[in-house]
Image (cartoon, rainbow, N blue to C red; front, side, top):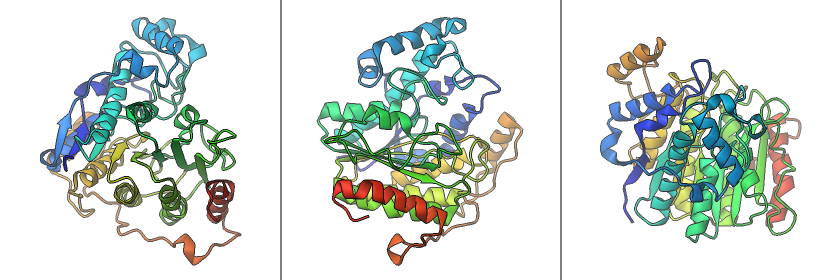
Length: 391
């Protein structure tokens, strides 16, 4: 197995563009790629452009009629069929939508193939993580569900146990739906509580289909306002124990940067430094439980200058085995590029000034009156007994 990580990148993914007033500005991808280069990480990874996902691959998750609807909307955006979630405020149709969405999916599928075949130990596609797309419809800025497609491809290649951990501020509903009745896939999502945020799913009681898959879906619904200590406490109170029990052959993780306190679309209060801490933890968990096989994806994130490029550059560095120190000064050339592209002042360092981030382990006890602890306990009580674990 190659010890080098792969960074999946094709400049054409920046064509995933819903228009000038849409929060998912593709400049976040371009600036991330540029910052990775400016930090010298290109020499530490193999930069690979995978081919676009073909229709047979897309149909591992998506219905044929939906794929045809996306292709039709790509050819004539004005004719987009709203019954498939296309042409909506969240998912406006645009020319070549099918091609660029399939390209992003292809990068995640390619990452999964490289890791499974031993061509790379870790692979990152920060353009991916489009976790809301459903088998038969677009949703939440997501056309094709590249995360689910990567997992489906791993199963097709022979994987018997794949774990998916999603730390985006929004529930990973599309991935959960794709594998709701499949005990080979353990989906774990930590997200803002559905009472206060789209897509209004991801309750702790959502644990998978009755039968063999019961307990294969895990949801931690965090109270609005949760900060670094609570977020890390919840992650470590749920994820490591479940991965140890499940024994995945591959770990797929989604690292939406919209948990950040500056993100305009959500209500958690997590810092860049806590995001980095979870990235480090996912890397360690992949080595501890999946022989190091790790596919890491991007996701949401709408603070496109201050947060997203720094967060995902940390992710690339961790996967490459060359972590970027939090105190690292950001090259002035990148800051000038960011201003030229967005007219926004860019940050000066790779930290929010909160490193190292501390939290209290679950094993040290919990407070039944604390809202964060109530959320963690609700998840443990709903799922852990189904997996033979004590809540």
